[in-house]
Length: 347
Image 1 (cartoon, helix red, strand yellow):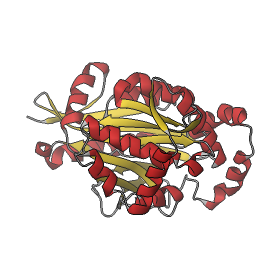
Image 2 (tube, one colour):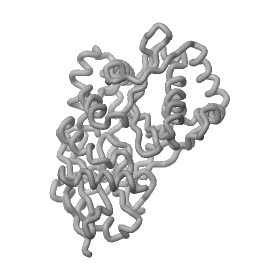
Image 3 (cartoon, rainbow, N blue to C red):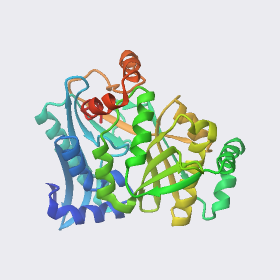
Image 4 (spheres, helix red, strand yellow):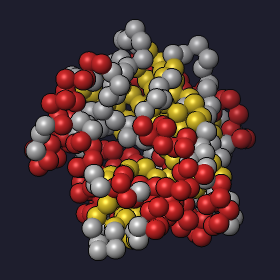
């Protein structure tokens, strides 16, 4: 039977997600719900494509167009997601992948984008395409026993976790994103970057339910210290967005927070702790290495149409230093009002 390339529509969503959950190449960010989230929260056009043979979905490719005067014009799989690109079943063969790529290329040319970006987790498909070497990810096995995971943490970092426990810190699973957003928005302001809108996190919680969990750490008196929003997918836990109070470091609240997440994930039966993407040479990069995680290069690849090189829309770019310094001085309310209009175009 010939392979057909089709756009995702609501009647295909159940089959799409069943394929994603079964396909080893697929990630949490390939789920169909991201189409509506990206389209309605950030107002970007989405193009979720799948390859079908004899009535069966055999490969998927979620794409979204991000068009900005400041940051350029791109077709990306997938903005606001650290992993993307084509996820194909083993039996799909090269033809399904090639047909999806042909469709993406034709779409990119029709839209007039400057580049097409695939945020692959671990698979380079085009050795001759430019790649982004700035990002790595950190993934590690969760051992079956809670105490074994504690002992697997390097000694100095384990001492920080025990410090948090000794300080009487408490972890809570929140029913909403209110406490998380208060810590997150203040945290990103201190770092000089715009916050994503609260409605984005509310939508994530409403859409993914128990697979989107907010874990918040307080001291014994209930003072907010640190919070993390995580995703659960198959047998993995992915801490994805986080925020903390200025007092968190002294009390080892961040160390305690990630240990509590790992402990709870172990008890839930998870087998992989995905610490997520970090930029090489940054504080988060060092923090994750201190936990005994080894960096794994991310296979981001680009097809350039109207660019001479890979875009660098990130805080490491020297041209954004003045903006970052200015942003840090804004009142929190002003930053939260303006930020979403900027960050929607960064993706």
